[in-house]
Length: 233
Image 1 (cartoon, rainbow, N blue to C red):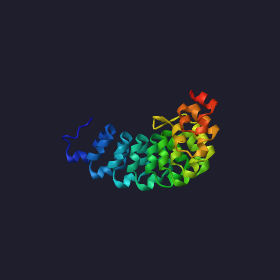
Image 2: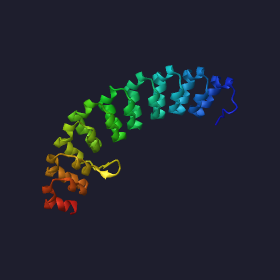
Image 3: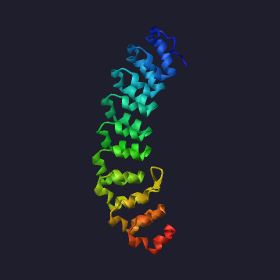
Image 4: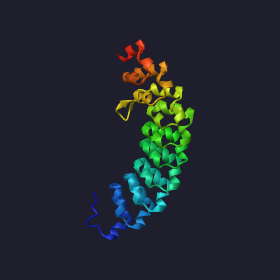
């Protein structure tokens, strides 16, 4: 790697020299002159090497679509450094959330209500749903799609949908865990109203995935012979 230890100011303002430098390590853009931080060719090469080099680009280039898209393709963590106008760019946002679902927190508000952007983010990380627009969290049809990807996203939905029988049943069928620890079925039943805890079909689906979920069902269903057998009681 080219060292800047003994590089003079003239070299840091030398576009040919800096092109070679940032191709090796885009982060070294931070040591270049202000002139070169505003140089399209130099910055483009820098972000191709290290997406987060976008942080050191001139403000005008943080608003350059070509540069920002290249930066995000290289590293989704470059997204927060983009100009606000480009945080509303659907293609750039999709590219970013595809790599890291939590980038959904940084996209423009309009895209937090975009079905495809939110679902793409959730495919990468189900927890991204917490950053989705409130309108989606109360959208019944959308929530049915959401819980089939990550059941525990149900906790971020509108309260009325957390008690929706069809949505809860779909969530119960997902064999996933909560934060990599407890099975989601036990958690869902624990926080569900009695109408859900006493629904035999829902409890049956829950214990198929998580036998311990029977502990969170109604007292009557805990006595159900068939359910107890399935749960291994």
